[in-house]
Length: 296
Ligand SMILES: O=C(O)CCC(=O)C(=O)O
Ligand SMILES: [Fe+2]
Image (cartoon, protein in one colour):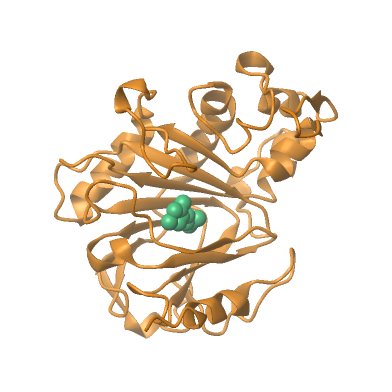
């Protein structure tokens, strides 16, 4: 029988309020050769690792260049977030201004105290609160429906952003056996230091053997990944800005979670001359979680 408490105990172990740091002594950090479990890592190319305890998982250390990290963040905030076709967790609850008057644009231009009307019974909220706290995800390409847990008719979806697709398709081709893998949908997760993502398996895609690829930008996090049930003890991995994880093979259907975002770990290359940008990025981890949805 599944003992859900085994995974949950590890989530509890790392989860702690905001700026506090949990005990990292059993967390694998690919940037620290003295860290726990480092000797179990196998280097298959410089900066590319596999880990015997999680078959199929590929860790690409520092794989997204600083330039591309910034480009992807700017494209999300100044581009995709302004387009009503890309759904966010806020879409059903607020009358969001879009295009050049988007909540991001207002925030960025110093109008963070502006109120945005809620769709009743949701109360209005300031632009600052929406950007800093309430925006948790946006979908790109095929728009996953979180309520029905399905991907609706693809002909209604906006196209998948090309730069991001080219980048991850090359990685999947280089490091897995899937030569024709296509980026069709992404969930972009925004986390602040007190946010967590609880244990789950992503299983709405048609072919659950096709790899899933995940880019981390901004604050470091602790990422847990176990096996096919919550009874297996997960490994804890510290992910840094620029790291990529490919969940291929058995790891594609493994339980995983993000119990902790580590405050004050933003790399300086993500800062700009804008105070508003810096105030936002200093307290965020942004995860691009990319899938092929359809059977090839
Ligand atoms: O934030 C992460 O690294 C993982 C996100 C995730 O598992 C998901 O979006 O399904
Ligand atoms: Fe996931």
